[in-house]
Each structure stands twice: as structure tokens, then as C-alpha cells.
Amino acid sequence: MTATQQSQQRKLTRRTRQAYRERIEELREYGEEDGVTISPASEKDFWAFVKSLPATRKGSLVLMDNGNLRAVWRGGKENHLGLQFLGGRMVEYVIFKRRSRAKKVSRVAGTDTFNGIKKQIEAFELSAMLEQ
Amino acid sequence: MELPDAAHVVRYANSRNLHDDGTVDAAVFRLRPQDSGLSVYWLEYFSDSSKAEQLEQVRRLARLNIRRSGRLVELNVGLTKRYLQDELPSLSFVNRPLAADDLYGADPSHSEITGLPPGNTPHAALIGEMIAECVLSLHPAVTGQQSR
Image (cartoon, rainbow over all chains, first blue to last red; front, side):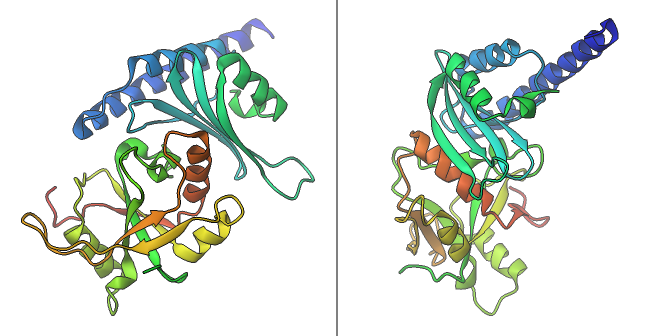
């Protein structure tokens, strides 16, 4: 990667993180209206996960009734990754993936560690969906 | 009474559960620990009305803390059941009218989505995603005339 490309990637990363900060503040306000507080453990894990990836495309964030943050990345109509940040560096994941030539969409859900979900993302060939 | 496949229902989604792209998150279709079904409102109960009038009736009768930024999320019963039949054959839509009480008038359109897995499980997350894929449209939860 050239110095120019590295500089552009840093800018994109800064922009993505700023967008996340703004969204989390917005969710905090919406949550206050409903009596839902963002779980500090979930928020901490969300940031740890985002920062552990080289350069992530911004996912869409929501705040669940239990106070956990949930991020969703979509790639086309049938590829999908949803992660609820449970705290303790654990995530609840949902993956929808249509592999080329496959008739049906694979759908899996479970809970896993950060390392475990990263392996699943690779196994389902979803890494590109998360990249800038 | 089970709702017919042709029926349409709406469920309230608050702004915390709406995505940037205008879609609704799967969290809207997960059971809370104390619930056995998800409240929805049967639009065709208000027969001989336009869609706009049906939605207005729901807004008037629903016992919800509705926010201006929230949305009413519309599903078709048959389409949703067919889409989930392999993954969740127990899924059904049942009319459960609410009687009038000291605070509220009767709500005959009130219905529930039943047969869902416990809300704190990964299966609930998967089912929620699949139901979210069946959403036909999102309507404003509050109209101009309402002040909530």
C-alpha cells in the first residue's frame, strides 16, 4: 500500500469512527426516551471490535431493549452479518450468505468470541463486505 | 382466531431499531422475557377503510408509547409464514382483542405473532432477521394531527 493509500485509509477510518460516535449519541438520546441505557460493556466491546479490524466499512447500529448495541453489515440483498455485542468480548451473530451457484441462502446464528466470529467471517467469505 | 393469509398487520418499531437505510432491525421481532407473543395490529379488521384510515385507527387505539420518530412496520401474514415455514413452522398470527379498561378503549385489531423462540437466543436473532426481510413497508407512527 502506498503512502497516499495509507493516508486515505486513515481518513476513511476517522470518518467511519466519527459517524459511529454520532450514531451512538443519537441512540443514547433515543434510549433515554424509552428508558433504555446503552450497556457500557456492549459499547466497550463494539469499539474494541471495530478497532481490531484493519479498516471497516460503516455498519448500521441499533440499540436493543436489553441495552446492547447491534451492528449490521449488508452486501447486496442476500449477504448479511449482524452482531450483537454482549460484553466480555462475546457476540451474538447472524450470518446470511448466498454462495455463488448455491440455490439456497445459508443462514447461521450463534454466540462466539471476537476471534471466533472473525474466523466465521472469513469462512463465509464476508471479509470484503466489512472492508472500506 | 388465527389471521387469514391475506391479512396485513403492523408492528411498532421505535427509532432505536431503525437502520440508516430506512430498514427495520431484527430486534423488533424478538420476544421480551415476559412476553409470549409480539403485539401487532390487524389492518383489515377495519374493513371498508382505506389503508390510511386503517393506520389511523391503529394509531388511535394502540396502547403504545409512540414516538414521532418511530414507524409502523407492515407485514403480510401469508407471505411471512411461507417465508419462515421451514425454519419456524410454529409461527402464527392470532387475533387477541383487548377489552376496554380504565385507561384505554377496546382494541379489537390487537393481535399477536406467536410461536417465536425465546428472545434472548441466537435462534430468535435469526428468526427476527427473516421476519424483517418480509417487511412490506414502513409507515409514520405519528401523523401531523397527533402531538405525541
